[in-house]
Image (cartoon, rainbow, N blue to C red; front, side):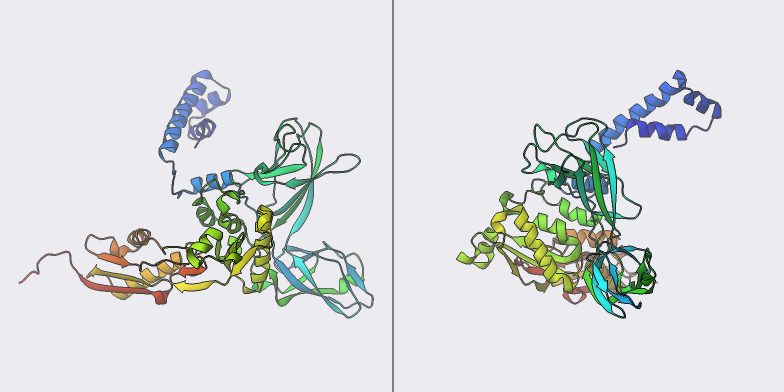
Length: 483
């Protein structure tokens, strides 16, 4: 909703008479009251429009999606890319590079060594580097208040990868743990909650000594350790690199090369609007409290959906319903997923088990991973076109549109679809995007087989599974003209 101050700024920007504009800046009541009266009226109208356009069920507007993400605590964070590099020492003396040492790739991005390495003369050593930058910011609280908030200012084009907060207490400093939405946080515990707003700004929220966490007092000093990254990068272009700083003559003879096929973990940027739209379809009650009704699908998807093509998490009840009852499934969760990068399959599996174990220790070491079975959905479209349309061109447009929306790498096919795709949604998609179906003559019918899909089955559309049968028989004239 646009507020009064914003309307006032826009109204003043439209004033072209310099005399009236000067009277506004000197706060002439005759001009000032008129401008603010109009701004107040527009603000009231804006409120009515906002209420009338609420989306209580299916959220489609970007504004509603961002508001939902803010309420659910979905942070605009990224995952830093990790890659193996070869460090070659051409000097006659051994060279030691400490953990956290910066190197720069051919694209100007900074990488950090994840461990120390000593390279002997004329030797080559392999080490893992991460594309991230670390910096520390000191903050002094200027007010005493419960649940005090401090915004985190990030560098341009960088995303937050991780965050640490340490106070300056004497004799020992206290490290604050990140506890989403203050779940299970007792009074006096050194903890913080990281939040965001609809503008995707990030805030650190301190606690309240009377309810949860610790109250911040004026004059308290904190150090924020901020790790930032570019997230998703094109690793195919990674070749040579160099040390950002050279501290000795021997380091001048150090060469750094990215290994061919040395990807350890692919980087991802913050979730896009389309990805947030998928998460917005989940009820708000789930959030980080995955224990409720045993629904862990939302929690796992939020963490790994950027690095997977398909994710499905189901509990014991669903397992018994579709696979049969067995004692081996008691108090177990089931997972099926497909990593975008095949080399990351094992790494993501371990991450998912860790995520579930942290949410509920009952399922620690009790996660059963299933192989994903690909299941192309066979869809048939029959219809007729007006004589002005080219059938081959329309068929190509239909298949391209459907594969883009429901194909193997689409978000629509990234989760368990019990009944497949919604035929009305597919029909509306074709009707709104295929020009040949927007006249008053052409028509089509969609036939999707009625079948149940199991949780580990990855259902999607491909060009081979789409059958389009169109005839150019429709016409806008009822009878033929005879001369």
